[in-house]
Amino acid sequence: MGLFDFFKKKSEEEVFLEAVKEQDYITVVNLGKSLLEKNPNSISILNPYADALVKLGRKDEAVSTLISFAERKLEEEYYDVAIPILKRVLKIDPFNIKAIKLLTNALKRKELYYDAFNVLLEAFQKTENTDASTLREMIETFLKDTFHPVFYEKYGDVLLEKEDTENALVNFILAGNMYINLKNFSAALRSLLKARRIKKTEAIDKNIVETISYLEDSKVQSILLTLLQEHKDDFDFQTFTVSQFKEVGRLDYLKSLVKQIPIPKLKYTLLALINYELGEVEEGQEYLNKIRLLDRTFYEKVVAYLKATKPEEDLLLSAITSEEESLPEPEQILEVLDQVLDVSDLVTDFLTAREEKKPTKEIREEVITLKKKKDGKRLLSTAEALIGIGNLKKAEEKAREALNTEYRPKAAVLLAEIMKQQNREKEAIAFLFDELKRNDYSEKERAMLKVKLGEIYQSLGDREKALSWYREAQKTLKDEILQEKIEELERETV
Image (cartoon, rainbow, N blue to C red; front, side, top):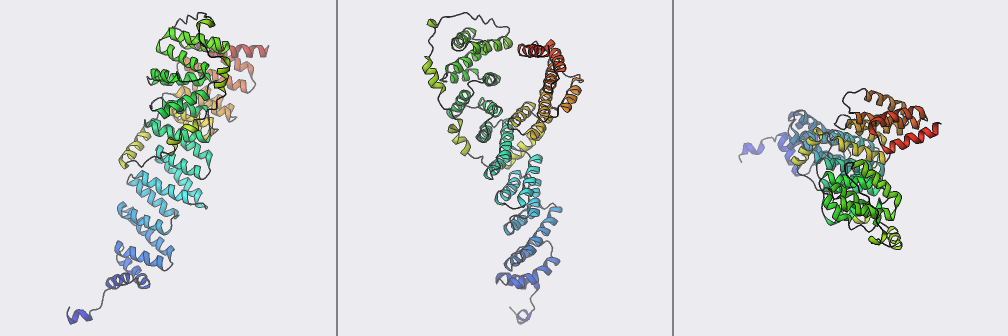
């Protein structure tokens, strides 16, 4: 180095870098501001300047400087520059709402949805102050814009940790039904079992049966068998289970499982229904007669159902004597019925197996799929589950979405029922009248709308109008249960 170089005055940049090296934070701050004004895009100046501000206890200035820099980069669409800067802000101030919002939006622009959601969720999980409500709103906005079941499930987990069981339950139900849409049945089962752990309802249990109908392993089998035994007196649940397994082409599989059920009447009922669906009429008749020996009234109920759903079959319900059948002793039946059944004892593995982070590309593709796909059956199933837990507002949202699918008739009936449960009968009646004006309903679908009108008028105490609508519907439906309802109302109005 020459003599001239020795006496040469150092530039601001050189003094700044020496100060950084020597951890002279006062000099770094004094020079950093002016250097940034001259070099507004220099990260090599920004980062040590912000660090020095923090060291000197001037965190607010550091945060403000970093956010301003990141905002400029976002406007220029330099997301890869802005994202690490915003992450730096959150290390200094973990609950800075502006930085959280900017970082989330930047990650969404990069289609890094999982990372974006985690920014919101981790902040919400850690905070307990007034920012929690703001973060909750941000999360729920994110879910509406970028819905994916893994986000709903993870949000449900955190809500449960915060003892907000009502909203956790809603998110687990939504997650479960969205997983079914994506044909991720194992994850769907996990979410629905989390929901069931909070509250047991028939609608949730039907969702679980639907999910299980696609799965095979010993733990899943045990859950199904235990659910069926919990619903041993619920004929509607039993017929639903058989119909669901028929829909997915797995009645033989269900038949083999049902034979393991220790409750005679339940086992015989399911086997009778399954055999008739499989066309194995003689075997079905054998089980029907076993039911008759156990419970004549219930037997008649099963026969009425089969006659309504299988009118083409000759039931040939011949009488048989007790000597021809080997049935359990009454004491054995009572012993089985007294057994305590608990699904929760069987689901530990599903509830402890957390959803692993999915590849970014897979999350992105599934978000696009869910935005495009409107599954009417799934929406109705979700709405029914939400009704079961008393969340009528959310149920109405899902029912209205289903109106724009091929399941519109069922959605209309369900929506009217939701309105009725909210004491909005006049609105429900007006809605059903408008639906009856449509030309795209079949006669049977129109009849179901008329039945619902009858139910609403009956709930309002207007028996004459209720009867009128029931009779109109019966002209098409010719339904035994509806006929009984009509006759009962006629007796009451005399």
